[in-house]
Length: 80
Image 1 (cartoon, one colour):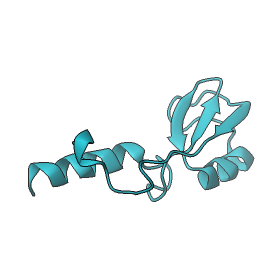
Image 2 (tube, helix red, strand yellow):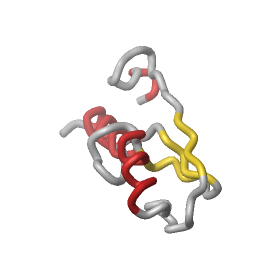
Image 3 (cartoon, helix red, strand yellow):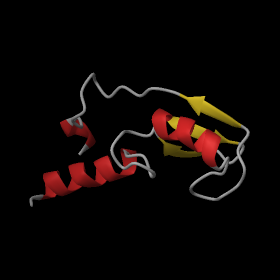
């Protein structure tokens, strides 16, 4: 693999949900403020454990948001 592909793969790993590892993170657990979940996993976790998968602190609320990266799933070459 070349450097650009390795950089893209590491960006993808940072952006993926820590539970399903398939969707992008778009949910912050509060009060610990860990950005680690996609909205679907957050909904499931709400009914199963009520604990952050990173620090295991109990959460009280989720903050959902959506990121757009130039309307594309590919990183901008200026970011690499």
